[in-house]
Image (cartoon, rainbow, N blue to C red; front, side, top):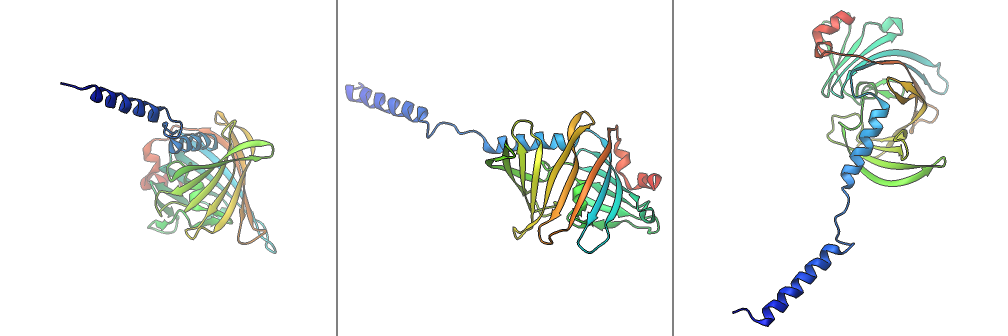
Length: 256
């Protein structure tokens, strides 16, 4: 037979359980990782289309005491795993093409029979790494964490820390500022494996391209060598239906 003491004990335990469940300190916390991932994906969608697209990029690199260097590229991209980067200028390098499949990157040269393997972190020109053109978004390469909020130029921004998923990506660590009201990227800081600031990037001149208002000017500045910078101007962006065969070694011969 159940005693009065037994029922009192059950009543007390039930009250304690309810109190714990309703306690603000133990209430279910928001999924910060999921929030950070959502912010990053929305910012990525503003930087570049998720669908197949083509864009021309003019890059002007300057350094103290050196003549400016200008180069022009055409990028065909589909998702974050397939990219073709064609050199349009200078004319002496026209015909060189980079192909990225997954995180594997090769350069094909007209006078060389075999492609040459490249790393995403290798410098392409000025302050621009191969991965800066070959990878269209951050979401596929980094694990984001929401660090804090900051007010910049009178507007509130999320500050995301992006940690590389492995050593094969372009940068080990990135800090990214994203506008809270419209998810536009404001600036990024890129860090080395030793956590040293390598360079910074600002996203400027937002204009309508391929169905969204996107940054058309990126300014990348060297944090270790003051005065060295590369300015990337994006133009002629358009959505394209790019079949998988475009991103194959055999197809590149048709583009050279």
